Length: 255
Figure 1 (cartoon, helix red, strand yellow):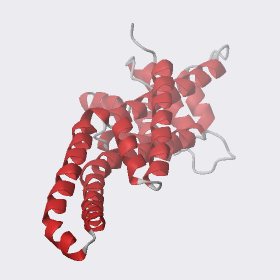
Figure 2 (cartoon, one colour):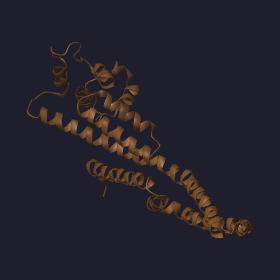
Figure 3 (cartoon, one colour):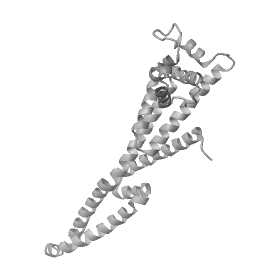
Figure 4 (tube, helix red, strand yellow):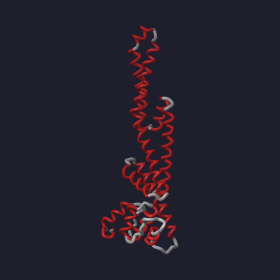
């Protein structure tokens, strides 16, 4: 059974909250001890790091053995066998831990860090959209067109879908019982003296102009509804590409 936008959005929010929790736990352990770092690595990246963990263990054993043998003669001469072996082993084991962090843990943490950053940008874009700023929609579209992370892309798409649905339902509720067309509502909404510089659209071409360049997202949303009414095309709310593709095929009507 297919999930609706709201359910998918909720699930993704929960998933990303879990990522943030994991990242916080990771940071805490990193700055505690090397042993805790290895334990967290096994928890976060078990499938990919289980071999690394075992390799580090085996490498530590090999290094300790090799260094101990190399230091035997020197140790006997200095009458300090145990001290020499421990120093050699500790030095090399520390190097192994540093290399494991550099080569295995950090490269896997960076995508997680980037994903969390993108979550914040997506959420901020949605907040600006709900305040009526066109920039929020433009930034969200930019994220969707540039990200290569499938989870980030799906979260951005779900965010757009649920926000677009809210705008549409709000306008539909406001129109109920008014007896006006969407085009009439759009003309009335944009013909307000308290907002200088606004011009009421007189045709489809001017409606499309508002869709592409309107700074008030409420006007953009209302323009989408008027576009559907004037063309009969059931384009999704805030689907700029669908509107412009239709205009490319019906160029005279959009001028």
